[in-house]
Structures are given as C-alpha cells and as structure tokens.
Image 1 (cartoon, rainbow, N blue to C red):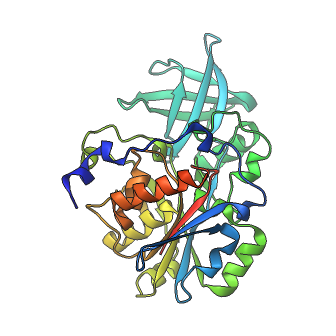
Image 2 (cartoon, rainbow, N blue to C red):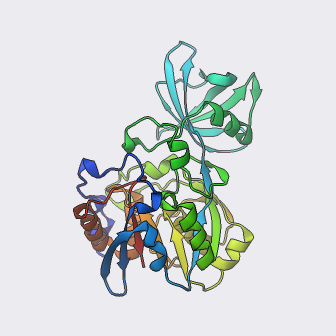
Length: 341
C-alpha cells in the first residue's frame, strides 16, 4: 500500500455520461460481466447469464434479502409550500432519520397523503433531519409506516439516474428474493438474476441470506482529503443463525454485492449477529473472510470503489474500470457487473 492509496483523489476516474445506466437491460442476465482472476491476472468479458461457469465449485454464496421501500414522499408545509422527504432509517421505535428537500424549522409539521404527518424533532449538522410520524394524530411505528409508504411513496432511485421513477422500477429495483423491508437503495449486484439463473445457482451452490438495510449514506461522497477521515455511515444488519454458522466455518465464500461483503466482514471482526454496521473496507483494511466478490461498477471517489480496491488494489481497480469503459460497459445501479476471483 502507498500514500496515494489513502488519498480520496486517487480514486477518481473519468466516466463519459453515456455510460450511466438509467434503465436495466432485458433480460436482466444479458448484462455484461467482467471476470477478473487474481491468480492469473486475467480479464474475461462475458455476460451475466454465464456467471455460474466462473463461480468456483466449492464456494458458498451469500445474498442480501433486504427489500427496498417506497421511501420518497411528497407533501406540503403548513405554509402550503411543497416538500420532498426521503426516509432513511428508524433510530428507535418512534424516531426516524430522513432527508428533506426544502427548508424546515425545528418543530415544524409536514403533511402527506393518507393523513400522514411528520414532525421535525432534530436538525443535524450533516443536513439530515430527525422526525416522528403520525397518522390521524396517532403516533406510528416503522412497521406501520412501511405500509403507508407502500401506498403513497415512490421508489427512491439513486440521484445519478436523473429521472422520475415509474411502474417498471417497482420490479426492476428489487431483487427476486427481497423479503425484509427497510432499504432505501437496492443491493444492485443481485438485480442481474433472472428466476431461471437464480434457480440454477441454488442447484449448484449452497446459498445463504443476510439482511443489511442499505441507507442513503451509501451514496454519500467521500469529501475528506484522506479516505480514513471519512465518517462512515452505519446501516442496520441481521444475520440468521444458520448463516452465521457458515461464516464461522472455513468454507470459501462468494459475496453477492458490497453490502453482503461489509456485513460478513463486520461479523467476522465483531461476532455480532445484528446491530449497526459501519465497517469501511479499503486498501488499509482488506477483507478477512470473503474470498470472491460480485459487484457492479461504482461512482468515482466513493467508499464502494474503495471497497473493490480492498480486494485487488487501487491501481488494478482503476485499470479494470478503464477496461470496462473502453468496452462500453454500463455503470452504477442499473449497469453491468464484475466478478473478482
């Protein structure tokens, strides 16, 4: 590792605008797949439909079964001014961390469809807000809120997609095995599976699930000059007992996505099966338990490209990204994938 590996600017790269995927390809497994084999230092270009040909036979596969909620809602202030609220995560039974587009004061109440109201109880320095929710003057908890959001909310597409969500996104921006509601961003490496390909995966490999509710912090850019000065966001996770048993073994593991990787590595270091994961993987803090990684292509200077660099080094990561750009790969959430062996 060199001093350059600790500088945020060292993780920058130029991405032509046309490479940002605004919609997925169909069928989903027709997406491109770049396979990088560390042992032989070789690159293979294929499609996601051929994934199972490259996954090592003896490894077991981990997936994130979080479900994206309709976290984006539009309402009004008492003045009648319009407001946009993005739910992030519950802080406790009745308080929730949110982002609000539009000026709000401490104690102000916001009004939404279906009688939903939000009262601002805290203004945080990072721009986030803490609110309580009520419906028909009765305080509501997270499980009740999710039902209401499902009726009045919008799928929270990442900001770089730069379009409004539509009906297709309700299916496209959700994994086949999404189960536990709570994410405001999808675990995107899993979006490439078709039902047929996923069935084949389960026939060939033992698959396991963990839950990590991806928060809005996943899109937060690294603004510190030195990457280790970046305040890493935390996200709620839960690891079922049977999944933890496999993690405690010496079985080789393939993590489907960065969220799975961070959760496994946090468990490996702490042995906590649930709580808040704030692990920052980078070249100075490489993986200790995950052997192989399947992931999409990530934003410049993001914690996610730093996570990829924790597996293969910064210079190799940037080399592979340039290769993907040259080969017309599509980037980010609805884009193509990379398998690191």
